[in-house]
Image (cartoon, rainbow, N blue to C red):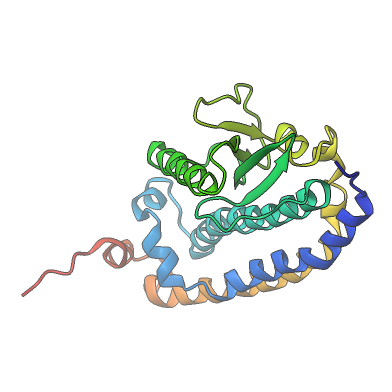
Length: 247
C-alpha cells in the first residue's frame, strides 16, 4: 500500500475541476424553454399562486440546475476516486459493464459501482446493480476460479451504518473514501482542494445563468402572457399536457 500525497490530489483538482464548471455552463446553454416547461407540473404553480413569469422561470431553471449539477459532479467525483485509488492500490477504471473501479487489496479483487449519494436507487436499479456484480464475478473468475471478489456500492457522500447488504457492501461518505485510500480522514481532507478557484468559476456561471433567466422570462412573457401581462394558464397547460389525437 502506497501513501497518498494530498499535493497530488490538489494538482488533480486544479487540472480537472474546470471540466465540471464548463459542463455546468454547457448545460445551461443547451436548455430550451419549451423543454423545461413540458417537464414540470403547471397545476402546481397555479396552486401555489405563482403570478409572475420570473418566478416560474427561476423555479424551473433552479430545479433543473440542482438535479443536473448533482449528476455532473457525481461523475467528476467518480474520476477523483479512481485517480486516488490508482495512486494507492493501482486501481483502474473497469472495462466491465456496470463496474466503475477495480483494484486488488489483501489478495482480493474489489469491484466498485460508484454513485454520488446513498439514495440513488429504486428496487429495479438495485437489482440491475446486483446483476452487474454477478456478471462481473463470472467474467473475472473465467481465468481464475479461486479469485475472491468483493462487490461494493461506493457513495461519495452520506452514510449507511449497515454496510453489509448480503450480495454486496455499501460504503458511504467516510467509509467509501477510507475504503479506496486507506485514509480514514480523506473525506474531510479533500474538501479544501475542491474549492479551487470556485468563486471565479461561479461568477462566470452566474453571468450565463442571469442571461438565460432573462431570455426565458422574455420568451415566457411573449408566449404565455396576455396583453395585460397576466399568465395565460390555459395555453401553458396545453403546451404541457395536451394530447395529440390521431384523426
